[in-house]
Image (cartoon, rainbow, N blue to C red; front, side, top):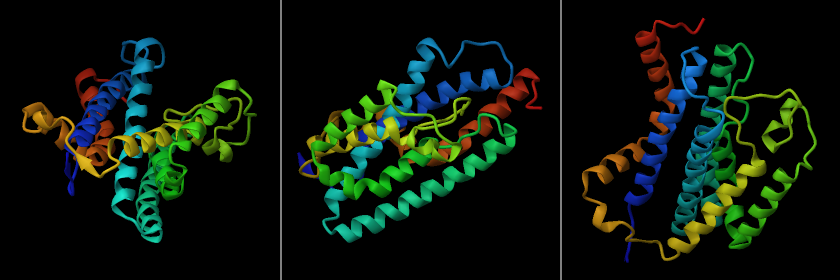
Length: 245
């Protein structure tokens, strides 16, 4: 494998796959939102499909964070760079919170969604990276805490942690417990597969049409994330005659 200085097409392609999966999942969510008959996206296969989509997004963020850290030896530079990116994503996330609160009339709006999660994870990344492979142990502990049911309920402002009111519901909810575990696993995978800051995975696919297309979608993942729902909902309204009101 050669030392790689630019983007990693295989990671962009994985983001592209996650983007396609997200659009498919949100299509079925929007059917429910508009009252159009369709399969339940919150049960069975589609629920698992949605979870896999979120896991892919967060895991890739962890892998990418590891690569960036390996290219930035100075800790203070790491902290500043990741803080800026993390705050940027958090601001967008808070914007989504406000928009969904308004559209959904305060019921089920995004409190701590995937952008909030990735934003906080990136801010913590320079410190989490220093855990090395112990990050896997920490990830296992977070998963154990979450699925053991020992977390108590809490006020809405604690929802970021995994503690929330008993009547809580959100259309996009990825709290630090357990979702930070996915980011930690991504960091460890990045350390394993890109320990020498090299690229060579899927090299023979780099020039294929599907790889190029997926990589392009991956490079534009944030933009697509922000615009795909308004586009989907508008198209469904036009085709079905339904209304948000």
